Length: 361
Image 1: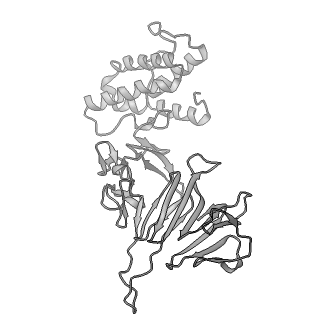
Image 2: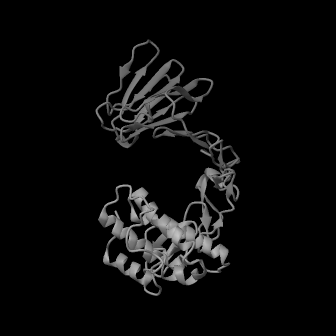
Image 3: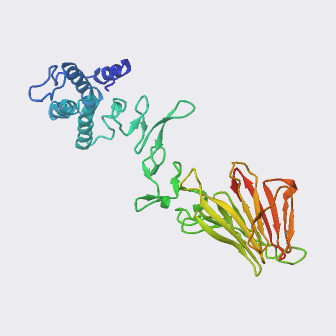
């Protein structure tokens, strides 16, 4: 919708207040088709196109009046008739301004004062005095208008192309251009170089999604290797014995740990609510002929369900708060908590099963 506010009218009047409009008619020219434009819109187009082609534009480009200025003025009216929108006529004014600046070798843009007339230009601000090449007008906390750069440019006037743009891709697709100095602000996992093309130290993988811990070789003062610890939690996130961290969003049965006489496995299934979510549904610990199975609750609580098979193929349930000790395998409830159980095998393998928010970890 065309802006007909008092402020817009004042801008039009200011643009034409310093020059004559005698070069341009007051009636719709017979050489320009109206394309069904209403009388009201015709009058508005005549007023605006004339205002745009007078004022500063006529002052700077006076050697080009009446011709070819009249040609561009007629083009302004035609653009309005074709589009049905008055502001589209500004294209003709800007085209004439560019032609004028090049032909007369002007140092200043003669259409600069039209920056708030309705179409985007390279100037912003109430006085059209703030340059803005590849950005949009924004206002800081003090009410000062400044140029907010697009994703590919930086600088006060957003005229500089970020050096991080390579083959049309900004910061290798893993960062954004700093609007002040133009360098890449890389995402946390892609901070390995200035172009965000390699992983941050401590992260590996084609998508830098695997985190690697630095583990001590020995524990002082015993000079013994540290105990191996691995973790699976959430949907699910993994930390291996070697300190590698990654996400394992795949359904199936997986081996978490294996020793000569102990096997720890996890059954991962899709979540009910979210198709892309995976959760651990069952944890199984086999030590010799004894098998301990831990399940998450089906009633929405965090209570664990524990079953055991002593080797006769008969699965029995361990009732809370009872504990189990069979075949060198023990099962206890951590601090009598129903959501956390500890399984200990003859090989000193300890498995801690815990449920938070209905997720087995």
